[in-house]
Amino acid sequence: SQQGEEDPQALSIQEGENATMNCSYKTSINNLQWYRQNSGRGLVHLILIRSNEREKHSGRLRVTLDTSKKSSSLLITASRAADTASYFCATGTNNAGNMLTFGGGTRLMVKP
Amino acid sequence: DAGVIQSPRHEVTEMGQEVTLRCKPISGHNSLFWYRQTMMRGLELLIYFNNNVPIDDSGMPEDRFSAKMPNASFSTLKIQPSEPRDSAVYFCASSSGLVNEQFFGPGTRLTVL
Image 1 (cartoon, helix red, strand yellow):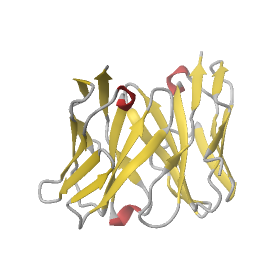
Image 2 (tube, chains in turn cyan, green):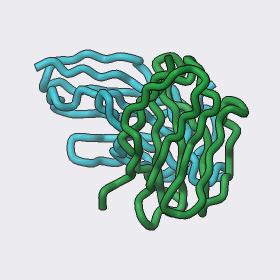
Image 3 (tube, rainbow over the protein chains, first blue to last red):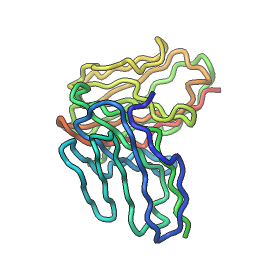
């Protein structure tokens, strides 16, 4: 089974609303990353949060990490139609070198 | 920097043929990853290299798949013989450092008829 699993699998909202996506994982990590994938394109890194951090911001993105619950959330505020994409969480562990384990992704649709 | 470069972008071949996918990582990156993405199985790590050495190939589905990294600027993923179930988008990614982000190429869309 996958280390990171996103919830929900699909999310549809109106432009201007906030979008929240969640990620759960199973084993201890040293960092968790969020990536975005537009249809037909490669993944693009959005933000990285280390295991000793609880919250991080980047523009309209806010990521939280709760290591006690082994979960993370990605919040996109004031969503735009251009935010329509799939969003993946990925976890890195101390034993895995530079390897990341990706979840199944959340498909976000923002309606104009 | 041009980013991670993959070729070809699209490949259509017939079952039984050999397929070679190519990747040029970002200059200076010391880790390279090959992934496969399908609707059914999502994004799967096939193999990754560190300093040109294969570190983990447990994701390679079977002996028909092989990957090489002869130098720091080039890697290939070969499928021989190819089968229809190999149809997928294959991504190459590279990274540097210990705690790092991965930079993905545009992918190769492989269709095996």
